[in-house]
Length: 321
Image (tube, rainbow, N blue to C red; front, side):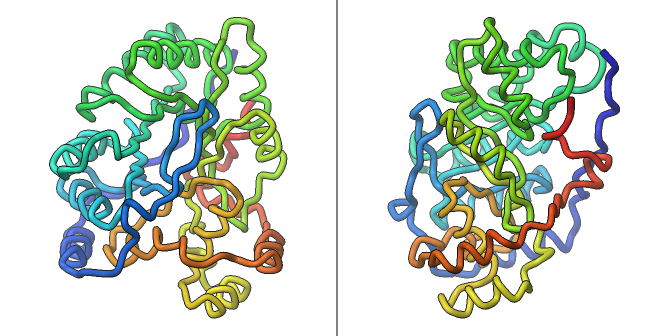
């Protein structure tokens, strides 16, 4: 099979401004959702995870990542989403260990990013299992959920999944799943006579401006939990009138409306920010509820706004062969 070129997705560099924003904001004492207030939802295998998580993509490794995780944990977050590709797994692990919070109260998701060449197309099973071991070593703890980051190399896809099944059997990950998989990719894993575990979750970009109704229906019928990355649409539509109207009615921000929309759809959103007050605000979404009319208005906003289109080399990973 022909290999596809790897999409170029390069994290932004650490800047003095970013560090200053984060570390300065951490001195504030915003109101926040306590850990006890955070609902949990089930993955497809019955394991539970907090209903809102902290996305750590583009969070620079080192002091910035460690500080934002510490602050998020202080504000009530108990769900952290990292990846080998993000290069901040070690910082997540360190912040969790130093938090003083019992490890069993914190959910950590990580991921493996298969390349489109080399051993990834020659011995996918070993490559993925090595990556899981590297993630666990960096985190200093097992993963609560471990994902295949994207559906590359169709001829190796089953090998990748079998490696995650083995990682689960070895106790390296409690639950296993996928990210950026479309219906055909999931069907391939489920239908294979070689596999025995249905993915517990599928992490994809989801927000009112990018609906995935077919994928949602497929996953719901099979108990696969949808996890929503970029639930704020990278702030590209925060001033949309429908969002502003709902926010005004409930006395919240438009970002909170977007997070709440995901929660009410049954998704697990992963908002991200480097500012403490916004990190706190993004998880404070359980004191209000959008009405059926408000949900319908937001549901009607779909414009196929895939915010990572350019980063993925102008392709939709859920539509790969």
